[in-house]
Amino acid sequence: MGVKDRDRFSTATRLRLLGEQTAARVYRSQTKRQARRSRLTGRAALLALVLCSMIVALAYPMRQYVSQRAQISDLQRQQEQARKRVEQLRDLKARWQDDSYAEQQIRLRLHYVMPGETGYIVVDPGTAKQSRIDLRAAHRPWYANIWDGVDKSDASDQ
Image: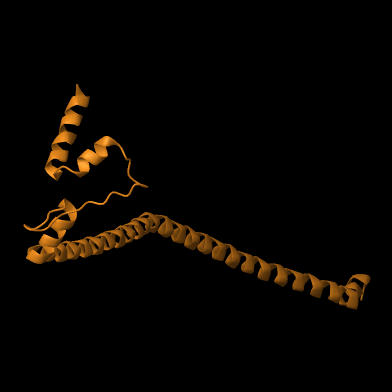
């Protein structure tokens, strides 16, 4: 046996060979894992790209949907308000159909009096101007005051 053979079977040589073989196996294993990781990374990138494109594709329709739902709720609110207003106007119309209510409103708004009654108009001196025109207008019938207003507006246009 020569030095070469002794070297071949020495413990140090065997350990070195065993270490090299183990290192080669570990390297091959890491290479396979990295290959799997790179495939996984490629798959993950593709999945992320698909998800992003779906989000972008759905963003505009979702915005339109939310906008239309808000518009629908506004229109429903307006419809409810209009329905309430129609109901109020129907009630008012029904009240005006009643002769006693109409007579009450005519007396209140136009200062009408029934035959045989005496009408009075009380002018508060603290709130109304006490000029000769105001006193004259208080003693005249309402329709005369209206014609005076028409005449004044006609004169101001010229």
